[in-house]
Length: 306
Image (cartoon, rainbow, N blue to C red; front, side, top):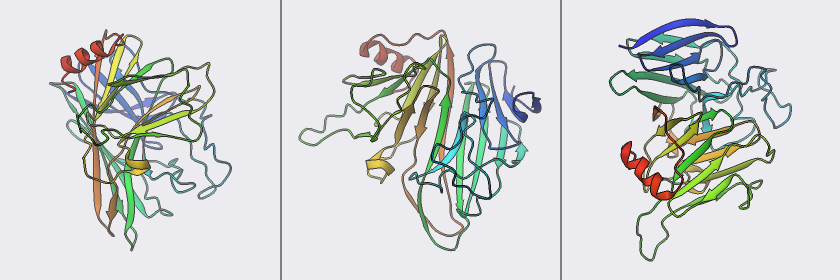
């Protein structure tokens, strides 16, 4: 049975908790929204929690409404392509929310300067113990806007991310896109690129930022932490235009965090038009990091990921 209730958290204020007998998720309603706790009850919380709100916009002191964007950790909802200050619109005001039988709908105030209205719908299936996270954006302006939905999950330190690569045989044509950012190095100690998978570690001892992106034939990624596994699944559409040289998935890390980022195709969003992008989250206990690509294939098959 799914249980949904408003709770008060000492660290993060008012939140809505969505849980069943196995998993739990907490999302803020005083700001954001941010999913700041998620995982198997009594085990690993995969969400990064920036309790001191130290991760403020790294791009200087440009402001909207005399306010700064605060990362806070956890799961948030952005718009791509990334640009400053548009992307870094502060979400520090209370969130309107509606509790449902199996989850919650969350509507932050309209981004007036960007003319965008965002909404997140969270539902839990108590048979599979999987969360469905739906992200909606509506163009509240008079003119079309070209954008992609860009959900970002900031996970906690000291884990390892597993990202499947494309393996389709395209004969004389290329079969994968691999994007790198200016600050990224191919020799980064946290990065391992195999034939079928990419491993990316979160290492608090390495301060250098790193980011990569790719289009995924197999649209999922996993994060291993504390003996548990967190999986994000979504939909990638071949033949559609995606941001950042065609990336449907991106990942960023530094000394504090690792970000698991999915993207929708780019949309030419007409006035008052709404588009959506969906992720499915699942959590598994006592799952080891695959020691080889063969083990990674076995893991993907076991959990129906390919």
